[in-house]
Every structure is written in C-alpha cells, then in structure tokens.
Image (cartoon, rainbow over all chains, first blue to last red; front, side, top):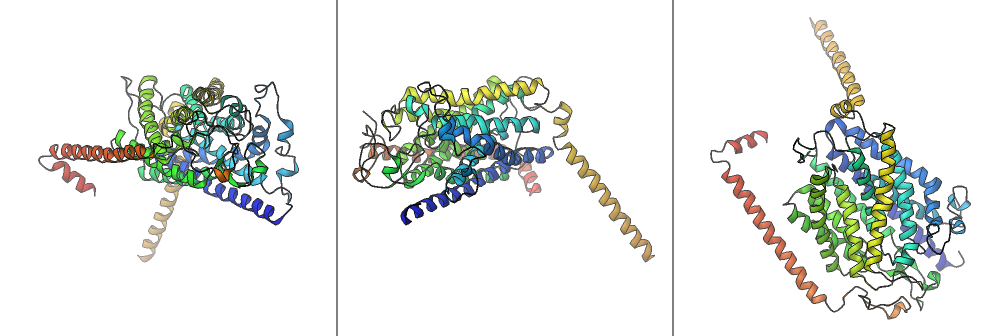
Length: 460
Length: 72
C-alpha cells in the first residue's frame, strides 16, 4: 500500500467483504431451519447433518481447488480464441501460494475467497432441500462438492468474471447471480431428482401428487426470513465497493471513484437496495395471489422474485424490478406444479422452481430489458442481448447444472449408494438416533423410577 | 439502440446520472405499479371473502368450530 488513501481503500474493502461473509452465514442457518422444518420428525437430524456438513466439505475443497478454478477457467478452456487454462491469473489461488495464507502484502484474497466460498455453500444448500428424506448423506456430500466447488465455480469463471468468455462473446450479464448460482443449483437439483425419484407416498396410485406438509411451518418461514437477511450480504458481496477508473483500466474516463458489479461496470449500493426490496415485494405479492395465500409459497415467492430480477438488479428501475419479480414468480409457481404432475418430480422444498426456473427466466428477461447495454467497461465485448442471455441460461441450467448432476447421480445410483432402502425411508433416516434415544430414555426412566421406589421403601 | 442509451462505458462518471432502461417511461411505470398494487388488494379481498364464506357455510351446527376450540 503506497499511500494512506490506498491503505484506507484496501482496508475498507477488506472489512466490507468480511461483513458480507458474516451476513451470508445466515443463508446457511436459514436453509438448515427451512429444511428441518419441512422434514418429518423422524428425519430431522439426518436433514440437519446433511446440510451442516456442506460447510466443512465445501470449504476445504474450495480451498484446495475451487478458488483456483475461478481464476484458471475464464477462457473455457479453449472456448475463447483457443486459449487454455489461465495459469498466470490463477497464481495466487493455489493452496501453496503465499497469498493463500497470512500475508501482510495481500489483505483482500482471504475475504474475497470467503465471499465466494459462502456462495459455494449456498449452491450446495439449495440442492440439499430438494432431496430430503430419501438421499444418502454420503452421496449427497459428493454431489454437494461437485456443485459447490466445481460446476458453479466454472459458471462463475465463464459468466461472472471480468474476463469470462461468456461475457466477452455472448454479452452475458448476471450481476447478482440469477444464473451462476441459482439456475445452476436448481438445474443440478433437477438432475439428481430425476434419478433419485420421489419420496415414498408422494404420489397416489393414480399418479396425482400428495401434499406432504412441513412438520413445523414456523421454522420453514423463519428459515426463509434468515435467507432473505443473508441475501443482503450476498448482494453486497457481488459488488466491488470502491475503485478508481485508472485501477479498472478500461474505457471509463475521468477520476470519479465508484462501486462496480463483478464485471467492474459502475453501479451503486443504492441501486441494488432499491431493486432488492422492490423485487422482494413484487415476488411476495405475486406469490400470495397465485398461491391463494399459502405461507410456504408466499415466502418462497419473495425469494424467487429477487432471484428473477437479480441478473439485472444493478441496472433496472425499481418498478421494473418489481414487475420482473412478479412475472417470474407467477411462471415458476405454475411450472413447479406442472413439472410435478407431468414428470412425477418430488422437489420437497420447490428448490428447482425457486432457484432454477426463476434464475433461467431472470436471465432471459434481462436479455430483453437490458438489450444493447454494455456488458463490460472494456472494449470489444459483446453487448447484452436476448440470444446471448438465452444461450447463457441454457449453459447455466442444463450444461453446468442438470447434466453433471444427472451423470454423477446415475453413477452413485449404479453403485447402490444414492438412496436409502425402503425400510429405512419409512422408519425415518434418524433410525439410529431414534433407537439410541429410545433406549437412553427408557434407561433414565427406569433408573429414576427405581430411585422413587427406594425412597418410598425407606419412608416405610 | 441500447435500452438505457449507453453504447459503452467510455464516459466520465461525473457526467452520468440515471442508467436504468427505458428512461422517460417512469410515469407510465408508476401508473402500472399503482394498478398492480390496487389489483393485489382486490384479489386478496376476493380470496379472503370466498374462504370465509366457504368455512361459515360448511359448519351450520357449530360442531366443527367446537372441535377447533377443543384443540386450543
């Protein structure tokens, strides 16, 4: 840091990302509450542990190779001008590089890594809810690492990076990750669900779906409130808080410092605050009407509204964000129920719809509403356009989401480790805990009753 | 023509103000937003009235209501 102003800027940026990481922790807390609330009593601990262990497993793998993928893969490899892996840019992201540890000369790498890591947890956690009450933990954790430390990171490197080939060639614009987190994770969940199959009893003999009510609707809705709160941190983490035009080194002239999106194009925290709240509101209002006041879908609709508008929430007008959110929520609600009936897909928490369909639709809408706008502050990049955004949506949902999950789930299924046996599913995935609990309770009761007998015998 | 009029970021940020799409349509957007908000109240009131009506009609002897009171 050459000057005091440079030092203040760097330390402000370091602190800014650190705060976003703490906020984003609430997303994971929210997902755990949500899933446990949605599961039946005999599956609680399994549901909780399945999601909790995402934290260490995705963290270590993201440290070992996920962070490196983000910097090494912007060219494809070999998609943009035949260029391969960008080893030079990825230097500093390998676990053995000095920047990946305590280093006074680099104050940003750790907090920036952590911000991305929390996105990784989110990607895996989105998938977790869809597959509750029948997937084996071991299989899920392999799938969680695949989406959390590999496929979403490739998506980020391609379409959520100032040098990503999708930004350069397609004019892909996805400021707050409609596609790179949500469409990928939603598509990934769908890829697993196709192989995994529905929970026992989800469909009647005539094929129509049954509602399996959450055991604790309060917990589900409070979980979603937590996710909303964490989402604020996520939005802030998607920005660069303060940067000078000469540091961006693109086409911007003058000396006015600014906040930027991930592509280093100017935006403001005010803009995203307007649009976050208006898209949340549009989503909640539309979901309330379309679901006839169903609490689960109303809350989920708030989230889906934000996700639909997220691709362009750095640029939309707040009322545009509200309408885009409302339209997206109407579509995803109808799509969820149509897919459920038609293809017998049992998505226990609506994750494919709320994240996958909303993300996909949000990208397509952004292509039209932002048509012709620059995707980057650098020269030679394609402008934002509907075809590029539609192709981007396909890449995110199907190529990086559905396909890897489907292949991996098929392999795990062939190995016999994807789904629990029928008996275990009916008994509950907490069978081991539940039996131990019953034995412990019986022993304590017997022991205390014996004490009472001794006391009463002594009194006689 | 870009929807916000900006062909590129080759500008001095000191000279840039609003960058949202379709500038000039704010008042129309506002009217549409108002209509959406009012529509929401109409739909909500209709739905709630139908729900309450259905529940009232379905329990002429009060036994269903008593059963719920028992559950506290």
